[in-house]
Length: 322
Image 1: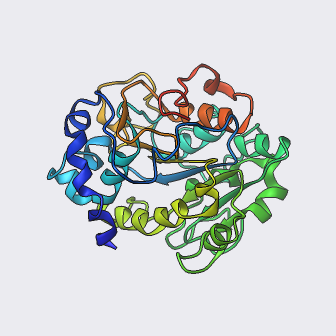
Image 2: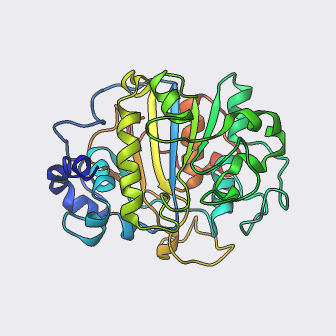
């Protein structure tokens, strides 16, 4: 698994200055998943979100040889080969407000990791938007033992699964919020192999692989096992897929904090990797993107209108060649 990661490390030196400063001209890798196309579709066929947990930008991203790069070589190699938002911010603390904000355009009054039975929300969401457009969505939850599970158990926690909080989604959630499975079998691997990935996919590792309870290296290994499968899929190879990899929040911070305008608190600063065939390798953008930017960009790529705070957020589309 680590051989996959180190295969790309020689290209990392090309963007040392950009990684440190967060700015600079893109560095063009000779090969990789990004920069294989000079054009992009007006509307994308697939948008995939991959989430990790509770680590700040400086804990994960760094120049070659630095502690972050040694802990997460594969993540840093993909940042080198594709796009990296160097000023990206989460919305708040703790986890759940970020997941709700990213999928509905607001925290909806949620300030803690309340259970779905305690704080269900009857509001519009990206999931419902996708359905109304005649498109499909699916959430793949690692460690979840049954569809749309609203109670935490084992290494699955419900507050990392925003779909289970939206009451208008009840019927859809029962069939489209599913256990992830493994890299060799299960829902996600089947959809990759059969070219049946939905228009919008939400991928959530379990408490260990998300780096919540386990190390950054554990999460890096997880990404190195799954992302190559997605990149080799018929969906990505067809040119109409964009993949976003981010963390829900940085380490530390206080509940209810507004991170969207806080450029100094490291608990508000998280990595965001942007991966698409038309993203120029080595692209670095330091704009004040947030989880609302992720929502807005996804809505634009899928031809949807913007929900809530997404309407006034910075879009990542032009900056990353989407």
